[in-house]
Image (cartoon, rainbow, N blue to C red; front, side):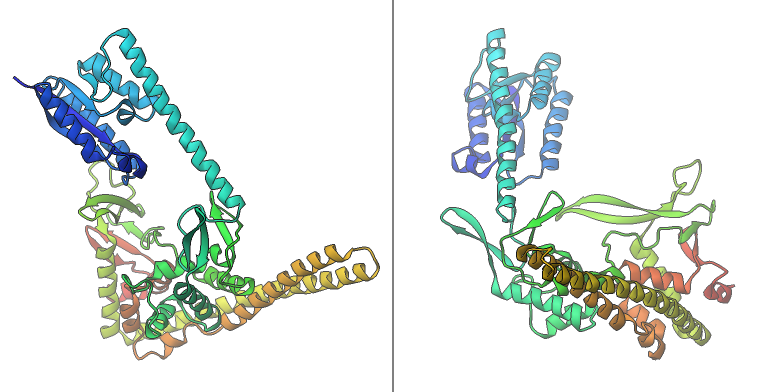
Length: 485
């Protein structure tokens, strides 16, 4: 009978592929060795350079599990070289365990080593050298990245609007004119034309501005990410911090501050759970309904799904009921559809509720403006104070120029924030109040609305819900609940 083997091949860098260590080359060498030694490979495991760290770990663990499960029918595990088998000593010890506990030989086809104490020592030395090389390479990469940040350069691919170019074997950053123009236009529309992100997207499409030629459509998340990216004011991100860059800024500081203030009014959180936060209570036990994110493997890769269930879902004989966000959306939109058709008085009530909220928002806005005006007065006073110190000779020219620049930037930012507040201080409910049908408007925009908008609508119309089996029922304290009763 032929000996049976497990094959394991790994490529950890593109350089190794170019140098002749590609997965196909390694696999062919393993199959050739098995055939020449009267055996065959019954299972092959491959780790590509493009695999994520998580996928690499997953494949390695799958190989170990398969080897242990089939140890009674497998004679050994084949590797092309010692450093292809394991890149750290922890993994190497797991491979030695297969040999010692399960009787599976550790075979390096291009580095044959005797199964004797001296051979095993040599093999461990090679494994230690491979681990050292990996650790040193990691340090070298980090040093290189730190050096690029010190020089004001991006450590990874340049953000949208810029491009990486090579000059004398150095990776530098230049502006990509068409994309940079898109970035400037997005900031301009959002900062100075009183447009929402959805309206910015519509305007960009109307003007024929595409994201990229292969994917012309703009998405909410892309535009939002651009508006939050400090790269566009001349900074470089590294280790969750921002550092001064050498690339050309696309946005001035006043526009940036204005945009950040406006975004603070309507913060976008892609993964917030619309129906969590005790909006729904379980009809079986009265406990809050919460959300959970599950990840599934599809043909196109991993995909996340949000499910909602009772917080005591796993307790005793509690019904195992879970609903997706889309299922809850469908039920909520059905309720809103009923309001649109059946209840003119609910439309009037909702419009009044919006007006009350707008009145409260206006009151808060007035208070914020007064505080900003106070800060502006202090900044202007400090500018005048610095000038007096310069005239009196208490500040030299260089220190005065630096201080004056800092204070004037602060003053301009405060002025921009005050102007933004005053422009934003309009009746947000106007469109809804004067619309022919406020609930038709909600139905139309629900699918594209972000988390804050959906929560505001739900909390304005409904005090809450009860989830009975898989049916969402409005709380009896809400107008719709009273109508249902």
